[in-house]
Every structure is written in C-alpha cells, then in structure tokens.
Image (cartoon, rainbow, N blue to C red; front, side):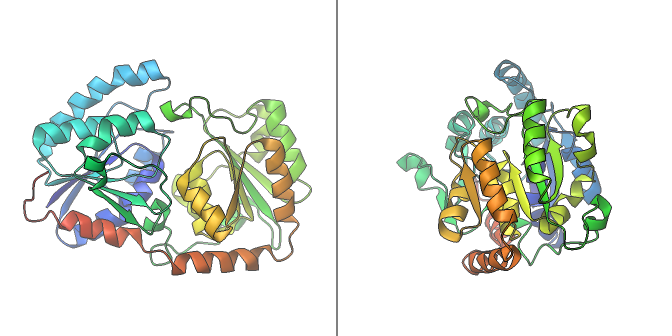
Length: 352
C-alpha cells in the first residue's frame, strides 16, 4: 500500500510516527504532506527519517489562512495525483479532504479538537472513516455519525503508551533539575488558530509572565516555553532543548501549566499533573480530570497559581499521580495498533 500522511502540527508527527514505522515494517510505503508550524515539523521529520513534501506553512490570521487554502488545495491535489496513495491518513484538513474527493482515495481521520468547528465543517463530511476518543464532546449529523468510531484512547496514547515510549531521565541534567527538586514547565500558545478566536488563557504580557514565574519559583525550578518571542527578562527561564526531547522532559517534571491542550494531555498520559488555562472545552482533558483526576482545567492565571501551589506542596505527589496513571492505562488502548488495523482494512483497494 501507498499511504499519504497529512500533518499540520508538531504533535501530528508523534501521533503518526509509530503507525508509519509499523506500516513500513509490513512492506507499505509512507510519505508525509505537511504545513510547517513553529519550525518544528520539518525538524522532527528529519530526526525520524521520514520522506516528506512541504506545503505553504501555517498562516497567522483568518485572512491569510483563507488566502493560503486554495494554494494548499492545488498543492495537495498535485502531490496526491503524483504519489497515487491507496489511503490518506491525518486529522481533519480541508485541502486533503478536497484532494480525496478528486482522487477518490479513502480518507481516514483521527480527530480530537471539538473547538475547530470551521475546519471540521468543511473537512469531516468528506472523511471515509473517523476515529474519535471516548471523551470527544461533539456529535455529527446522522450521515456522518455512522462513519465515526469511538476508541478508548486519546491521540497521546499513540506515542506515549508504555509500549511505545521509554523516558530518558538524562534530560534532568541537561536542563538543570537537581536531585529531589520539584520542577514546572509553563507553556504559552500563540493563540493564532481560527479556533482560538475569543479564547482566554494566561497573561502574555511581560509583567504577567514574570508574576507567574515569581509565584512558583520558591517551590520549584521554573521553565518557560512560548510560541512567541520571550522578553529578555525571561531568557534565563526559557526552555532550550531539541524538539524530539520534549517528552523526556515532560516525564521528569512535577507539573505542567499551559494553554496547549496537547501538552497537557501528554503530561497526563505520563502521570504528571497538568493545569490547563482556557475558557474552551477540550474533551480529552475533561475526561482526564473527571474520570482520573490527572489535572485541572481552570479559567484564569490566578486560579492556576492557587492550584499549582496545592500540587507542588503535596509530599505524596508522585505516588498519587502514578496510581492515577496506572488506573487510566488499565482502561485505555495503544492507539497505534488501531490506526494500523484501520489503514490495512483498505489494503484490498476499497474505495472511499
């Protein structure tokens, strides 16, 4: 089989990398079509040795995104015709959906972002099969819903399941976490996606970031990562590691605080407490909080600080979260196995 994999976020590389490796072991050919974001996707693909074709990079602002869409439509169709895939695999994406229509290629989607309503509205109707996690809070119409399969796995379990990931604790020395020292990673999002309109979260001002760092510093080593340029006053706290090492770091910290739902879910899967600051609903995080107590969704920075201090002052923190993680994993599956099975269901030339 020839499998074309679409990616538009660094997390997509991790989501699909084990699926691609497994498919290649079984004799299939894979190729990635991607839009660059944060200058990380290409670097990760190079690190893992995947073949790829780059499209226009992710654009900021609705107007620029709208202008880039027809260009990416043409590029996606051009490459799909040239590559002749038997299957297209990815998240919901308009340009891939349109290529699917014109090439009549089965289009398999894993989706977990309920708030990306515009994207879903113009992509999901054209998907052949749709996988969502059990916490997914959006219901599609009856014609689409019959193509939906709920799986007991968030996307992070495709690459951070214990069968897929073994942490490298040497990252502690690399970033300067001392023996027995608590540590916190704070991550700021650019909030420039179409589904970020109206989103509230952390205070992005220099004073706001410094206020959060100073509140946590007496209790932990504080590291900051942002999708925008940090001011000089925060350079000493800025996280600088190779992109492919981020999960090693997440596995070793005491707490994640941020506006990125993917990294919060990654922390939860690794048994690390998370605090997600947003006024938006994210189903996988709601499930992690309600069913397993792995983290906290809070509306503002002040509430985040209060929760963070509660977590960092808990002497039994590590043992409690290890047990929460164990219980969650006992009820979930390795998502990669299901993705491979789904792709191979189309190994007989089944059409969309």
